[in-house]
Image (cartoon, rainbow, N blue to C red; front, top):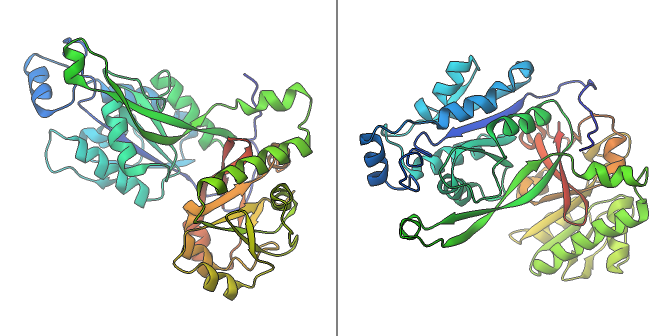
Length: 387
């Protein structure tokens, strides 16, 4: 698989990558004993009474050990004891405990509470060890708010959020920490009914999707022709944004300035203010070239997303040509509603520099810093760091 190494660039004030680590210490304990899962306190107690070994921390250790060469480039937040603290301590990784379970035998609720603490801590990636039950717990809290990656440690691994091995998970995380562009995909969370499974029936159910970093699969498409066909890629981006709009008819879409956003407006057949900000709803242009105050008034208490692009050569997504997107407006909609669009050529032309935030509010810029999803084609996305 082709890769483009963008890890050797330097830039000022680069924040450390914040990695969340959560371990379900009881994941997989029923596997070797043919208990076909480890969901539920009764099964865990039975497995432990039969001499089951807890292997989840050992598998997380294999993933985290890959990061040894990147020491000093990332920080870790985790849960206490065997939910993450012990494995970090055993590897000599500096960490901060941000969640402590009430009892030694943790339950699914503890995975959920730990994951919620990670989201609140604004981690760049949540790395968790477990099985499909753990993935369900994490998904119920995290959804698509932050990227996640699973270290396979359970009896059941039907979900698409897991890497093929603990070491593979560590490798993907190391790419992110090193500053390489890493593709993002939506991965399915599935789990089977363990009681039915023990009776010989496989009944799997879909529980949602989470954002997962993947290897640089998009590079192959770029290299086949030497470079992207810019017009075709812009059409792909526009088609995907149009589909998002169709799926959210009640949402106000604020179209930031720039030629890439202009290509989306052209695809929609709408007039565009190239150096201004327009507002679209249900495929119709409802406001053109709005001011900062007009924008806040128009979208107050309404579902709103903003479409931004990357300034070529500089990497700015805020503060260059879109000052109408004031700090008050960005706080009003939240980071999760900021959709960034750019071609891969434009991102590669940054030569490893991060995306730039210059909202004129230093506190807000710090709050927004970290991983951003960038739409680079039709259902094609990459993860980029922003500072």
